[in-house]
Amino acid sequence: MPRRVDHAERRTEIAEALVRAAGRLGLHAVGMRDVAAEAGVSLRLVQYYFESKEKLLLFGLRHLTERFAQRVAARVAAAGADPGARAVIEALLAAALPVDAESRTFHHLYTSYAVLAVTDEALAAQPFIKDPDSAEDTVAGLLRQAAEQGELRPGVDPRAAAAGLLSLSAGLGTSVLVGQRSAESATGVLAHQLDLIFQPAK
Image (cartoon, rainbow, N blue to C red; front, side):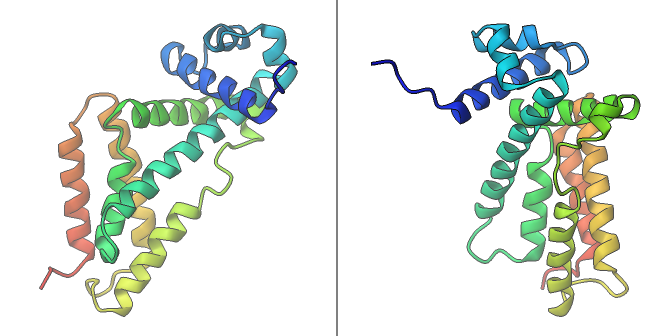
């Protein structure tokens, strides 16, 4: 009796093949034929699950984003049962730095997609991060909690500080990705910025 096909599993396998192929060839250059070869399946099968390259890219990058979110959650959980707002924010920002193969691939493909979407209307119409403000909302919420407990320096606006931290993290991630600075240097810059937001530890 033939094994029943798990379509969700097959789509995930193709998505992971896309991530591997795009990480090696570049998002701009990878095609459905490359993905089929990487997955060890026929081009017709890839086309069966994904009608176009744009839909394949969207699904593959959303899959990568979900994996990356799990990575961030694990780093935050490792900070302890009740680590405090600064430790959680620091863990979240550190997890986003491209310091290993998985995080480098995420930054590489995320940046490539954004650049391609500038001139490709089909890509621009389907951003692969469903809720781009969720990270800012999370960090701003943590900073508001810290403010209520008197942990922030006077005059710090939680929402503006959250936006600044995430923008700084993204910029530092790119600088690490292109070899401009080390991961240790980037971590030090983030720690310095947090020192400007949080009161000194007592």
